[in-house]
Length: 268
Image 1 (cartoon, rainbow, N blue to C red):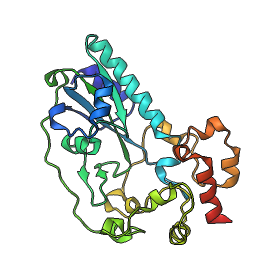
Image 2 (image 1 turned 135 degrees about the vertical axis):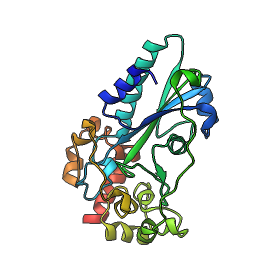
Image 3 (image 1 turned 120 degrees about the vertical axis):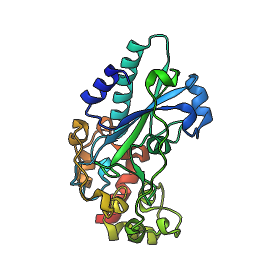
Image 4 (image 1 turned 180 degrees about the vertical axis):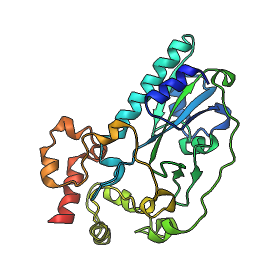
């Protein structure tokens, strides 16, 4: 891989990254790929660790500002480097909403193993990582792609399955608790009871917090996830956020009314 690409990742404090042949990843959104207008031949896949710790009634991922902001910043910066190196080629960045199976790509790149809860487990940051990618029309040899690694799975200790509040990891229930907190409209009494029992206003980290691989998870070195954190979301804090500030939070996509409802269900 070109030294300038490696230097970019080092500057951004991204330790886990790799390059793959596009033929070695699974495309899951053909329409999105077509709209990108790129003749995909290779890609860069990388991890953004986000764990800081301290989140109380919301998921760790949502305590900082919306992670999509940092994904866009990193992918845009990486594309600028790539354009400088390869001015005749084309590049497009994704994260969370991608034409490829990002988890599968990260596993194929050897960036982690597959947990029983369906999450990628990284050796240093556990499951507390976001995945992002830049797809290119560069020949695979130009990026220095790796051969796909066999997908390795966790030991299957069962901790995440036993602890899952709704039982969906055990093949029971229709939704995870995180999905329940993000649903608009009225909730069932049983769903409200679960939210109150586990004290969650937004999201659920239980399958992560009980995972043995997360016991020694390192704190992220990426400054973005340490800044402007909300670890206990209350009505007072929510009301203090103007519309611009609110839109920069990960929970904003479900609009203010959904978050207000959840706070009232737990505390009023």
